[in-house]
Image (cartoon, rainbow, N blue to C red):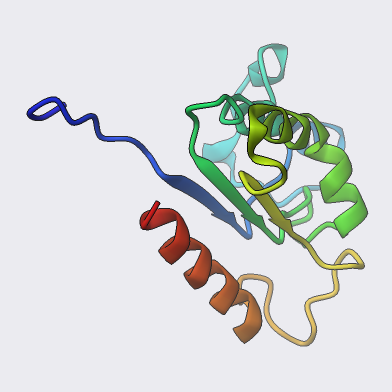
Length: 138
């Protein structure tokens, strides 16, 4: 807070990130490094719950691009929308329609289109860049 102006986070972009700790906890095998494993965290929250907390009226915009499952592979669009249902409801409920939260996921899980797991298609990279520019200017 400087000279009466409050700094605020305009947006958060989650690109190629894990969608849910719960998926890791129930998976026979997972790709989550040991240093990211947090004992007992699911007793309190999961990652979709944290995203949902941003859906309050004064919260930042959010962009989720190609969320990952426990295996490290992208999850399908249907699964992403299902996992992030509470966040979607909260963002719509804050009066911004669907504009506060944008989810970009592949139609089929694991469909990397010949690219590596961490690479974005050129079109996806442009979407992220445009989103950052739009959110940063608001």
